[in-house]
Structures are given as structure tokens and as C-alpha cells.
Amino acid sequence: MNATPVSQSRPHGEQEIAATAGVLPAQRLRAAIEDGWITAGQWRVPDESVQPASVDLRLGEHAWALRCSFLPDSDSTVEQKIEDIAFERIDLRDGATFERDRPYLVPLIEELRLPEGVRAKANPKSSTGRLDVFTRVLTDRNHRFDEIAAGYRGRLYLEVVPRTFAIRVRTGLALNQVRVSVGDARLHDGELTALHASTPLLFRGGEPVPAHEISVADGLFVSLAVADSRESVVGYRAKKNSLPIDLTTAGGLRWEDYWETVHPERGGRIVLEPEVFYLLLSAEGVSIPPQYAAEMLAYDPTAGELRTHYAGFFDPGFGYARDRSVRGSRAALEVRARDVSFMVEDGQPVCKLAFERMAAEPNVLYGAEVGSNYQGQVSMLSKHFRERPALA
Image 1: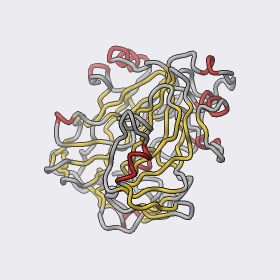
Image 2: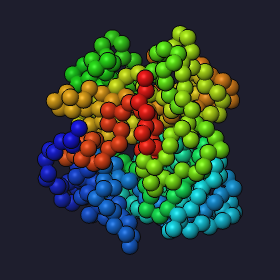
Image 3: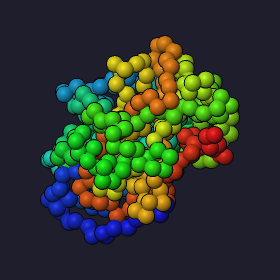
Image 4: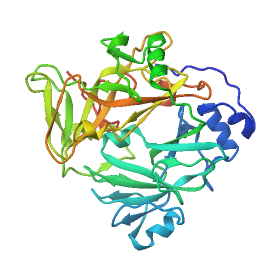
């Protein structure tokens, strides 16, 4: 799908950029960069960092290896807090390997100078989550990960914890992204139901999911696809003790060296082994209209010992085409059972999507023009693997 151009006009000045509640689209993010809301010091923010509803955040020139994770408090900066827990400084300019299950902290190239009333939120990029690399952004004097307070002015730091594979990284690599928002633009359940009725958000078999079959509860539920013949492949289970993955190179790895295929049991179900990382696909195709952005939320822990997803942002245009040539793209689900083996069945709700209004329609949508890797995906493996196999 080609990205769809809309208005090319650029608002000028802080008041105009922040005038409308919602998530800032690509053209307003570029204006915000020009106006210094998002800066890169001696670097520049490259055009390719700007996505339809977010900006990529790049690793800086060094990292600290930490003995544990942490959060700053209201009286401390991030760097003050790590004085007692950082034990090694690592140069990233020529690349470095991060070990499994070790937390690292990386000052990011990008910094924020947000006006009052303008906030931000960070999330891993899709390829980061698909490799079981746990990441989250910290800011000074803030006791929450990834949530960046309105009016924040300062540095950004990324905590990186490779869970399954050791990873090779270097300065300039983008593992996370940030959305900038004004006001409360979250859609409530009644609005979600009405939106699906007018512009379908979920598809099954290329047809909109009937309105009476969708489920909403502070977000739109998405279910799991694991039903097929017992010989079919419904997902992938990560192999531990594989060689490190170089995140700076795409398409160079044999998937068989890092993954085992997952086959369903009789009755359309699989049993997840505890603390093993799985990649699965949603039963529904997800479609994000141009006027909206979405975020996948973690599964409710009261419904089972299960965590779904690290990567949460869905850009405007994901699984969408104005001419209806694209009728939803299935969502990759990053799944881990906690503590005990856990059975999941075909059609079981495993995550939900929260939707927000855009402050304006982006002048490009998710798809070919912005180099999107996962539009219309039939395999959930990341872009780092060659000949990514489609599911049966």
C-alpha cells in the first residue's frame, strides 16, 4: 500500500501546533522539531525518523550496565540515581553487545522541550518487541516509565533488557518511539462501538466483524488465532542460547537458528511454557483509520498468568486503504506465560486496543512510503530474518 498524501500545509507557531486535542501527526511533528520541541543537540533528527504519528528515538554514544532496574523520584535525576547501581560504561559508537537479562541504560540522542499542556508517551518499536527486547523510557524526576509529563524539558534515557537473545547495538539505532499529544483524545467504549459501525476496525476473513461480536471494555479486545490442522504452524517459540542478533542489519539471519515452530493441539489450543517467549498472530485483522492512532494494552493479569505485547503503537493507516484493497492486517502478539504453564485457545481475547483521535490527519499513512515492514503481515517474525515464512 502506498502512503496516502493529504494536506501538505504546516502550522506555524506553538499555539497553532497545539491548538487541537489529539496525537500530533507527521507534519506537525516535523513542525515541532523545527520549533525545538524535539531536539538532537549536535545531531539532527532525520526525516526518516518521523512516522505518521510518532518520532523514532535513537541510542546515544554510550550505555551503562546496571545491577538492577530503577525509577527516579521527584527529587532526583536519572543520572543521580544510577551513581550507585551502574558498574560499567560501554562505548556504543562502534557497536556493543548487550547480554541477556542484564539491564542497560542508554542516554538517547533526542531530547524534549515540550510546551505546557503538551505531553508525550514512549513505546518500543515493533521489531524491538518481536525480539523480546524489553525497553522503556525514563525521564528526570518522574516515577513512571514511558509516560512523559506535559511541559517536560530534558534528556531521555532508555532502559534496555534483552530477555531471550543477546543483541548487538550501536549509536543511532532506534529501538523506541515517542508520541506527542495534546489533551485527552482517548475514545470511550461507546465511541469505539460507533466508530466500528461506520469504519470497521476489526476484520475476519476479509469481512468486518459483526457489531454484536466485538467486545469493548476500556478498549477494543483482540483475540488469538491458533486453530488449524495439527501440522500447521500457528506461531514461533524462541530458542535460548542462540547467537547474538545484530539489530543494525535487516534480513540477514536464518529464522530456524532462533525459533521453533508452534503447532496447535487438537481442539485449537496451545500450552505456553512458563517464561518462554512466543510470537503469535491475532485472529482479527486490525484497521486503523487515518484520523486515529491506537495502542495495544497489556492483558489484564486477573484473567490469567499471561503477558501479551511489548510494542504497542499502531499508526494511522495500519491495515487500512481508502479503496478497501487492504481490509485489516493481523497484529503480532508477543506472549509470555508467567510462573506456570498456561493454555490459550483459538479466539481467546488476549489484548485490547485503545484508540485516540489524531490532532489532524497525517500527510502520510502507515505503508510503503514510510518504509513500513508489517503491513498485511502473514508472519510475525521481525525484519531481521530472511525468508520469513508465512503461517499455514
